[in-house]
Each structure stands twice: as C-alpha cells, then as structure tokens.
Image 1 (cartoon, rainbow, N blue to C red):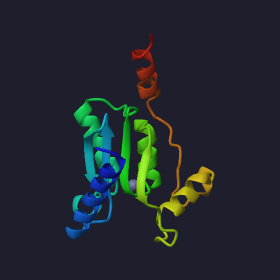
Image 2: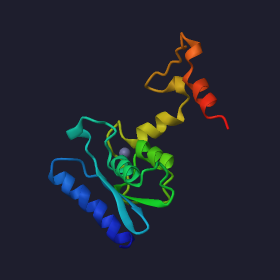
Image 3: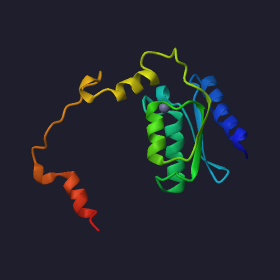
Length: 152
Ligand SMILES: [Zn+2]
C-alpha cells in the first residue's frame, strides 16, 4: 500500500464513523507498509473524552507491537490532530503525521485553537486551575522510589 491508500483507509474509517452517528475522525498507524493500528473517534459512545481516533490507533499499534515506541511508524488521520493527539504522537515518537483535512478555524470555542492558547499561558493564567498539594507522607515518595529502583 502507498501513502494515498493509507489516507483513504483513515478517511473511510471516519466516513463510516459518521454513518454510525460518530465524529468524522479516523486514523491508521503504519509500520513497514502495513497497518498496525486503526481507530475512530469514539468519545460519545465510550463516554471517554480521550477516545480520539489517533489515540485509539496508537493504543492498538502499541498493544499489537508490544511496545510504546512507534518511531518506525507513520500515522494517517482524516483530520489534523488536536493538541492531545499531537502530544500522544510525540510520546509515541511517530515519524510522520499525514492528515487530509486541516482544523476548521471556525471550530467551537473549546476546540484545538483554544487549547493551544491555554497551553501557551503560564499555569496560573489558564482557565483550569492547577495547584500543587504536598505529600503528607514524604517517606512514600513514588519519584524517589522510582529513581531508587531504576539506578544503574
Ligand atoms: Zn485528538
């Protein structure tokens, strides 16, 4: 299969998802010319705000390949990835992101543009509050334990 065929698969997944009353998002992860993960936006059906197509496809690819590193994989998405999916793509280290439809600049107030603006703000200026709360039991510090267990 070639680039255009993988994109058509992502678009077909998105199209079928809309036919099933879902959102117009589909994605495929490709390794060595083979699809190793597919996903559609399943947010409403699963009541899961993180169930975006790209994340679903990354989860399936990682499960199938039994690893978290997708640096030898590309991802094809029907729509330009949102900030959450883009971050997941960075965590997975995918090589290249291909998308068919760019983000609609007139999208809803809570869309990608809003989140990108929020991320660029200092934490104390964001719409969602973030507050540091101390560990009452500093002897049970998971970060210290992790460092101790992962020393060479
Ligand atoms: Zn997304």
